[in-house]
Image 1 (cartoon, one colour):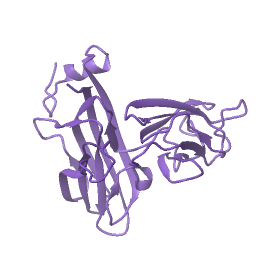
Image 2 (spheres, one colour; image 1 turned 45 degrees about the vertical axis):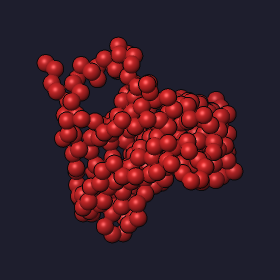
Image 3 (cartoon, rainbow, N blue to C red; image 1 turned 90 degrees about the vertical axis):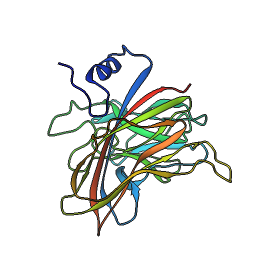
Image 4 (cartoon, rainbow, N blue to C red; image 1 turned 180 degrees about the horizontal axis):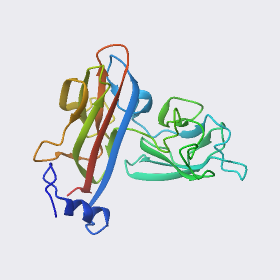
Length: 265
């Protein structure tokens, strides 16, 4: 039985996309968590950061464990794949062979990066051991600021967790938000933001970051699938995603949403 999706997109639509039967559309699932959100707004992503430079930047990948190594002696993560946008704001995917605690440079500079995951590992992961041993970080060359991290505390996650995205040039996106989750003993303010014309990098800027919607005093789980239409459209290049802050000290916030992309006409 086909049931109606809360956002007006039925199950048949999603099945066609995931099977590649509807080439007009592609789908990306985005989710992010940050366990140390403070009382100032930060992106909902590991480390509380989503880098938005105005020029493509040289980057490198490094682990906190020597066992995350692409050599035959490497017992955990051998390679990671990074997905982001190049200097033309077009999506690119790069795979890097790790060298433990020694940084390894990416071949192509990026102006945005929104996903990183372990793509080859020397460990067949179980509940006792994950596909990587250390925290794996994408950072600016020369041990600069971090852009993305694959978390390893408690259990290795295998991929970055970043509830922010940049729509590539030539693409238009609609957003289907699913839920926000906040520590039950905290309250949080959440803003869904957008920055259209992200490629306007000369002053005065026309690419203005502005709120798409805001939730105030969220505690526990907030379900967002209650509208008849998706958010958007957002014409690339355009930054979209969630920022949040908590009422006191620090707390955890998670966000989960779906992106449907199609060619800009």
